[in-house]
Image (cartoon, rainbow, N blue to C red; front, side, top):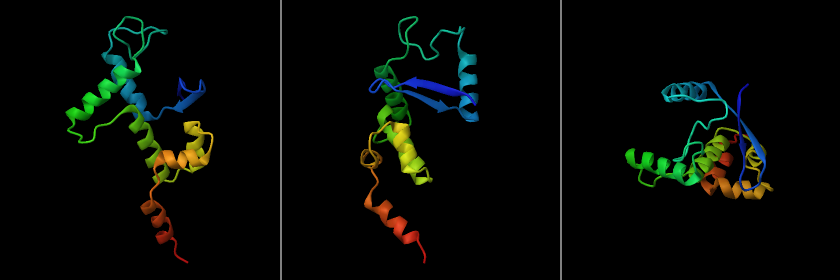
Length: 130
């Protein structure tokens, strides 16, 4: 299995993210659009040759895409991270796993982070049939 390895800036912890087939295909298309890439090059480059894409530039790109798609509320890198967790939770990922993915120190932080609302809690009780 292939992974992307990310070093979290805030905690310094290393995170390995599994790459699915859709992402592999997207990377292959993107890599095919680049002129040349060697083993030590960044694939998402910054404005200056040999530098990586900055967080602020990634934010500008994501904001531009949201505007182009006429998204009313817009999106950010952080909202994408939170949305991933929320939908992973909605589709059955155990909160303890999300806590580990996010490197949160407690389950309470993860619950607050995901924004689990009363409606979601109510649905759990309404679905249980005795």
